[in-house]
Length: 111
Length: 117
Image (cartoon, rainbow over all chains, first blue to last red; front, top):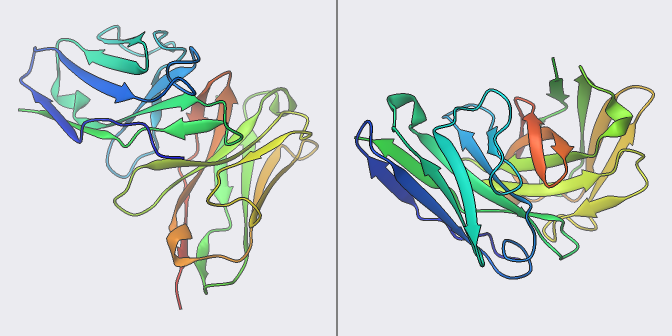
């Protein structure tokens, strides 16, 4: 099963808003509200930023928000800060026997 | 505080075997499903396997099905991944992870597995 499709890179200036997309199919992103987003800094473990499409875990800044429309989920980072520069991965539950699938990953650069 | 500590990684020859362990603390281990996720050098995340809290249900990525076995010992708060018939493409950092419905909410720091002759 192929990975969910994300843009390879997205960039923005400090203070701006950016959006990272995550496209799947009706068997994963479009079929369930179990889309999550992870932030990964170089050499570090991933960190959960969004779960169940739009929910933020305790401690995650409200500058991070998630949404979904059809087979595409989105992560928006508002008020971009230097510390937001990292790789971001989406993930979805899938109806296949594999259970979960990750996105291809997006490198967010703060200009 | 949730802590996940992986061990067992290392260098192994193609066709060889390795068993990873993950010691969990800071939560009621048998109440939560657990997963293994890997990341090849310079590549993205790949979900590998998951197991229910009781251990009765297991799930595998197509790339490892039939070669890897996930298990857990709830009396020891420990998760395992037995990896057989290893291939060069299995080279990766393997992360132990705690599941919440539809997501992974805690990750270990990872253990490196290198498959090479």
